[in-house]
Length: 102
Image (cartoon, rainbow, N blue to C red):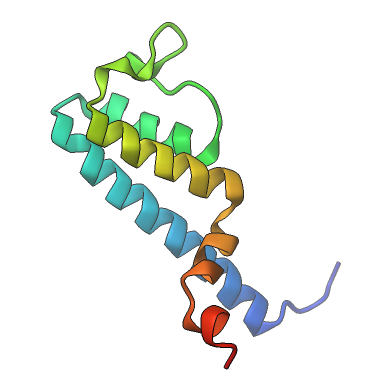
């Protein structure tokens, strides 16, 4: 609407995007140790972070997450919780200011 966006808002959006991309990268890296194809691994992580349902290939509409190891299922479960609870509350949980009050 012709208004200038404040720098703090732009910084917050950039931090949120960067954190989600870091989660996506680390999650894909950890789940890739199962040795499955990239499409199944990557879309499985995306499906869990964004809570969007099925991914592609082995985790597609006709598949499930049974092909992943227990370690990967734990990683995917943590990513699903982070995605469901949203990223900002998880970030705030790990900030020192939250616990010290300073």
